[in-house]
Length: 530
Image (cartoon, rainbow, N blue to C red):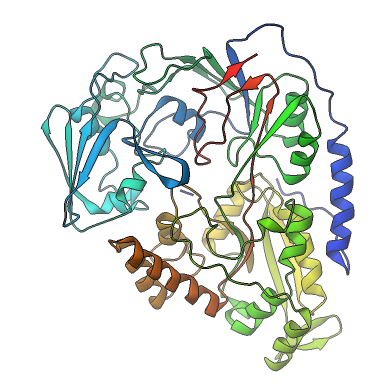
């Protein structure tokens, strides 16, 4: 789970006011995009979806295929519904034993893979064996918790657990590696071709496009449209122009083809387009590397006090309603009690004074060491961080007013994650995974010392995270997660910035599109085209 181009325009004092001017100019440019072209007359049978990256190799047990393309082709045992409701998919029902050590699934009968192979308990077991107990998938607690897989009947699947793991059912809703591939398409467990049970079958996949045709033998509601075409358009403004010109029908989503707040505002004013907005499901936070000055709580506290989160949200993210006041947004189960963020740059200066960081010219210093920090930023669009560079400029300006010098380092996505993993940064924006991974998977991936790249960890936090993910009843989970959040607040382990809204845009002739329950889905079964 889980090209440097740095703007030379820096915001000086009163940086958020300067930010308003930048965004206003960008909004004017967005409104001058290509005019709305009309689609061909009469009902069409193909929907064209813009995506920022290629479909890739749709191996459900690897990490290279695009999530949304996988979701069209492969299905889970359990579906993640609105508000986190667990709904039947390839499993019609399930039962968890009283001790939490046995989960029994009644599999749906009459389901076939695209190649005609029956989906049954043997096929399900074959798929589960590709990731259960494998080190590659240790980020999933279920991979470690499942001790055996049994098939007592043709459509009965039984999972035995070494210890109770309450998040297991929710983990089984994610896209990879828990979706199901035809055993005939992976002889001996070696992936050969993308053959699932889903409503769409793969026709082709190249570096520039992906094509999918309706599965006319689908067990569920048959889609109205016959074909899905994915067109790779990496640039955000080019995607928006293509939508206005009628060259594509749908853009949006955190991982599909992100829309920022500036673009969303221009879409809302375009009569040829419909903007569809969903509740936030992630949090973008400023996180700290405890090397150097940020090992001091006082420095972290000063950074937090000097960050005007409300102003940043008002300008960049469309309004103060998106201000993050907790580690997870309210839509995530067990997200805890929101906290009141405090903005007080004068108190930030006093905190640094008391800690011995005194002004030397325009930058503070202590024991001959200047208070300089590096903020690592990503140039590529990343879910929940589409405006991170502009946010970074605002932060750079704000911290300069209290004597902290911040260097902005902008790198491409691959370099960004490599440097983050290696700890080569002081400050970084990070985002939680979102549904259906949260809260358990973000907690295990970012707040546990056993994770590959924890954003914060300690023995006390490890104990609290372990207690949270293993808690059997909802009340205990609530209190355990709250203890996690309280500890993070006491440590000033992060500065929550925003719960970014989820934007999608379609042409006005697209009917029936709904914001999916999570950002890794692309449900087109209810869509029609005028």
